[in-house]
Length: 145
Length: 440
Ligand SMILES: [Zn+2]
Image (tube, rainbow over all chains, first blue to last red; front, top):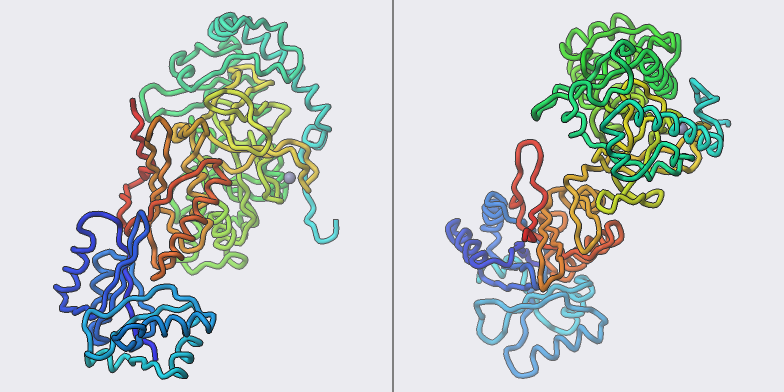
């Protein structure tokens, strides 16, 4: 139900994002989803990689002195059509679940848009999705993308 | 007093007198010492004349604020005999420091000065539980440095058996400690820790092979964490001890077994806590510079000697029964102090905030700048994995928590800048904690 996400602390300095992504590239880590959130003084990069590359990515990051961590997020398929996302957000709203952040995959599977959700109550959120026929991808399914 | 330990007091008459009585005693002694230095030390006379203060202006202890300050440089500039207030024939001892920068400093003691110093240290050892049945191992250095002889004299005075080991040779220290059955230890806290670690490495067990029960540790600042470690390592009560050669030597202030601040021997020294910039006294409990005046010394009295050490005092009663004011831990030097928007800021205060927040590393850098003629303080803190979150809002919350606590402790708003781990330079020895861009 959950997939693994890597997040990395970035200082707001020129080139910090570039050097980090280059590092992962050098270690053969392919990023299949990615987002950056920032405050006025720092940034947090979040990304999803194939599970076979996750340990290698974390090792490379820590070795290079980055603060990074792995956390669980929900990957949901949202119909790629007008009102698709709005319906999902409405469901969460009615369920009293708040979204810490949301971002979309780099790659698309065709009819559906793949979205990463970080919810304040992930268990309840996943149940709500399941009850309402919103498909969630497992880590294996993400790995096969 | 059930459940409480019995406190031994060496000189109850002086240590437990009412604060009013002591204040009166201080006034009498201050008057005498001011008269003595005015008559005998040209430097003091010139300084007082320059301030327009005459010995007869000093009527009570409160008049101390009228007197001029003395600095360490005064001891160097007047080396060797310039600040002596008694003739050389009356001086029976010289102590001092070699001085890492330039000229040494020396202090002269009359017979009475040595006796007073001995009493101060006897009070300290008694407060740590010492008595005639104790075997006290002194591993402070003996010589010009006051540690060794100070502890030695005090231990002899209380009738204990003294093992005058001086410093160094850890194996031999432990052998003697073990064979002689030493019950108390006098040395620096860092050397005590080293002794404790070596004892453990040798497979010796406190309580079985080593019979120490207490120690008086001074000559360098230390922390509560160090105390806990020391007490566990050696199975002892570890008491803090403060002193400085310029004032007497070890014993100026000492902790009792309550370990709740150091009792200041106020019948022989007066302690003021001042704002190092305005030179005005700060309210009780607030941090400021310690300024000592010796009020019974004959050989080389000190008027308002500025230590440049930062601490605070309390007059709240101590469970041991002593009525003297108590000195908190030394938390830094005025040399490190920053004045930001008119507020005195000590890097150590910021450090204490940071180490108090879970997950925050004690590596920090203070960057001060002036933006549109207003001072701005930025506190750089390294982002550790414990602090990190994938949700920006959580990190922003943590920033707010840090700046909120800094505001409540230091009194000014700081901008928190989280930086990459290990990006703040570590240096051997003293870390560089401050970058001040305001230099005009
Ligand atoms: Zn006490």
